[in-house]
Length: 256
Image (cartoon, rainbow, N blue to C red; front, side, top):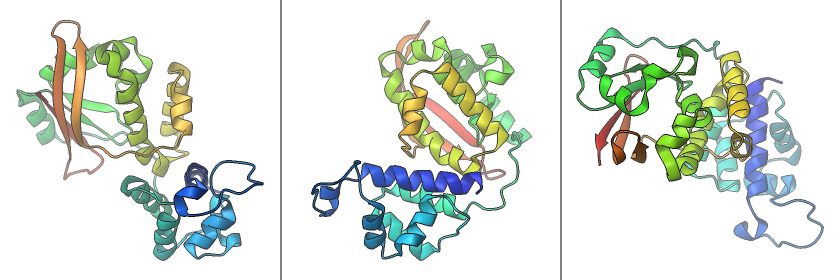
């Protein structure tokens, strides 16, 4: 059983446990030893055999068809981000080992010359390039090279908690849910295993958030920061994928 198959099964179980019988018109009844739907109920709702569904949840080396994935999405009442995540896990085969990305020269120069705060991250959320305006806010240059990662900076460094103040927990949970969508297609890769180990060791809240298996989608939003020099300041941000490498994302901030 590969890491991706295991993550696929884990995700199915987490969504099944989250779905209450009354939400899908099933009687609660007695004899339910755990919350959520039974495997048999999910299989019946999806119109697939119980043995086949059990194999999927157990993460055995199986490759469900698009029709089966669509049926599971409906049976488990998955949202758009969750459905996209399940499809990505089902199609994730033959992936090579992770290698830290390189920012093309043209993109690097553009970021450096932007007047607005901007930075580039990779698939593992490593911070690969930034400009002076972004550095003034987030202090990327003051981080050790091994710590230049959005999650490491946010979850394990005192500066991250101080910068986000009262909004830190909500923002950290949002980041963890968004990162889940990326992590699971790289599950088992040493670079991602190492990152999770550091997050578990450095952030007491992380294990609980990660265990919830929440999947989020982002791309734009607002952040309220408590900057040591600027004071309280709000930013609107948006992220853009690079054509040269879709794994690279450019984040740009504007004062809100």
